[in-house]
Structures are given as C-alpha cells and as structure tokens.
Length: 242
Image (cartoon, rainbow, N blue to C red; front, side):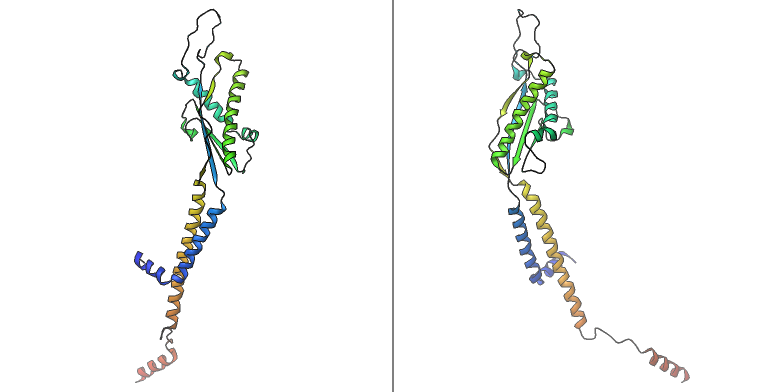
C-alpha cells in the first residue's frame, strides 16, 4: 500500500481516525498539564589563588611578590575544582542540603562541562538547581555555593595549608532568578502523542480490513458450493461404459 492509498483509507474511515485524533490531542493536553513546571537557577564560581601566590615565605622580612589572581591559574586550581565537584555531587552532601531522592528539588554540579568522562579540567564550578518552586530552585543553588566554600576552607585547614595561601572562591555569576523550563514536559507529551497517533492509524486500517471482509462475505457467489464428487464419479463411469 503506497502513501496516497493509505491516506485514502484514513479519509474513508474518518469516523474512526478523527475521534482517535481528538483522543490523542486530549490525552497529550492532560499529560502536559499533569506534569508540574520545572524552574531552573544557576551560578558560576571560579577558584583563584591569593595575590601573594601559592607559597608563603618563612622569612617575614623578605619582600613578597604580588600576583594578579586572574593571571595566575595553574593545574592545582583545576584539580581542586574537580575534587569539589566530586564532593558536592555525592548523595550524602545532597542529603545534608535537604535534597531527597525523588523530591521536587535537585541540583547538578560540574567544572565547566556536563560530561565528567571527557576529563575537562577548569577552575570553575557550574551549579544548576531545579525545582517546582522558583524560590527553592534559587535557594538550592545558594546552598550549594555556600557548601562549596565551606568544603574548600575545611579541606585546606585539614591539610595545614598556610592561611595566606588559601584558595578562594569568587562568584562569577551569582544565583540567577529561576526561570521556567518546559524541556521536562516535551518528552512525555511527544510520547503520548506518538502512541495516540499509532493507535489511531491501527484503528483506521483495522476498520478498513473488517469492512473489506464483510463486503466479500456479502457479495453474490462469494461462497461457491463444492463439486459433487459422487455425481462426477458416476458420470465418469458412464462415459467409460459408453
């Protein structure tokens, strides 16, 4: 069956396909309104070294060289950012921040690329928070940013690093105002629409098949009587005798 023949079948069985189309639209609409909206907030943090660099002189009277923190990025900052990403992404940290599995609020953290398997190393912390409430989405981003600063300070303190060399975290982009995101709704709506359209097509072709079968059964001479084998055999014997 080519394309236009299929279209003709669907148009001929409009009393089946049209209600199926209406049911599909109605079902997709209820799926759309049944999924709560998601709001998203984000923030960007950068790790920097102090102006005096990453070392501290043991001779207080020795003049110190001052650095511009934005011109003094090295591999240590990248490694520290990767450590913080791993710590902030753990289930324990999420639980401490009030995030529950399957809850309405969540967050993600990366160091500049959403795929950690690519091993992209940068001194950044990118935080994204999502929630069904815009205030909660922005609040979870703020909590994660504060937790990152606390984790960094604690780990440097545990390593007995000189306070003058502590790495600091600066907010490149503070937690943004949460905006609505409809990406989470599009996939379920598309799936419901596809299933509904497939069901409508199957119903239309099924109606065409049933109708064609009924026409064949009602057509004159559709059921032919089988030949009388007994009579045929008599006539054959008669022909032989003749």
